[in-house]
Amino acid sequence: MPPVLDPSQSKVDGLAFLGLSFARASEVGHPDSVTHQTAFDLNDIQDRAYEYVFSTNDDGWLVGGGEPLDSYKLPAPDSAHVEIMRIGTYRPEWGGLDREKLIAALQSGDILIPQIEVVPTAVVANGDVPPELEIRFDMDYEVGSEDEFVKSNDDLPVNWQLRFLHNQLFHKFQFPSRFCPGAHHSTILRKAEFRSSAHRDTYFQQCNKVVRQWRQQGVQPLVWDPANDTPGIQRLACQYQGQVVHEPAYQSGLYLFTDRTRITHHFAPNFLPPYNTPEKRHIIYQFLKEQWNETTLSWQPVVAKKRKLDDEPTRE
Image 1 (cartoon, one colour):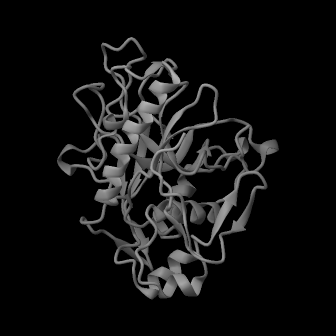
Image 2 (cartoon, rainbow, N blue to C red):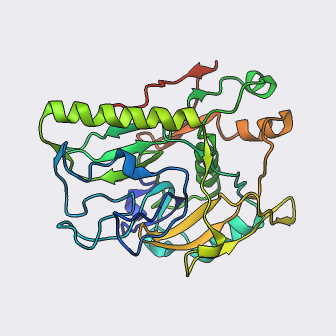
């Protein structure tokens, strides 16, 4: 069962969520795929030739342009995404969250949306049997004490924006169906069975090389070409301290999905760089200092001292 906030009141397991889109059109993918970012070509970690992977579920490859029309899997456009908060449905009587109230809260500035700049930190096989293959977007260190974090001259943790958004949203919105599946990852393949353990090892070694290259390049914004924008997405500006923020240089924000194939809204950043000031670091710390425990459905503090996390980019 998904770790929803209140299973007894969650009536329908819907698919609506707030998150990031990593969709990117590709010549080897589905012709209806769209491009929401150009920073990462996820084909670089896919095995489209099935040299290492023997079988998958019906969907085949979910990212890197999706499954092409001539595929013997189910042809479908790229749906690469990272969930920040699962909403489920927009019907409160089913345990969901009213969509218009959500949109109003985001536009009002109740949630600080930073410029999203991220980098993949690992490719993993999750615990399912057969497993899903996932791209991880973890922070590279825990923040420790507030005094240490605010006064530090170190860069902010990579991918800090994901927990920053997740924790704000979880504090703001209390509804039965709320959860976040596997914070924070993008699924690229389901029910992955490898040709052999040696093929599995080689596949992850290849992924390891790609992820190391991405990490060497550093965090990147998720931006699209306004001249070739996706039809049907309402792109909305949000307030900060009572003023609507509209800064074309910072547009890597948050998407609202009805499901992974349908995006309805985009919310532009309202909490803009620079972030490496004591004032901004104090605000950021308030939402990095704790994590949501999916088992106890409660908040738990992070470690009292700064702690570097595992920097091995590919894990099984």
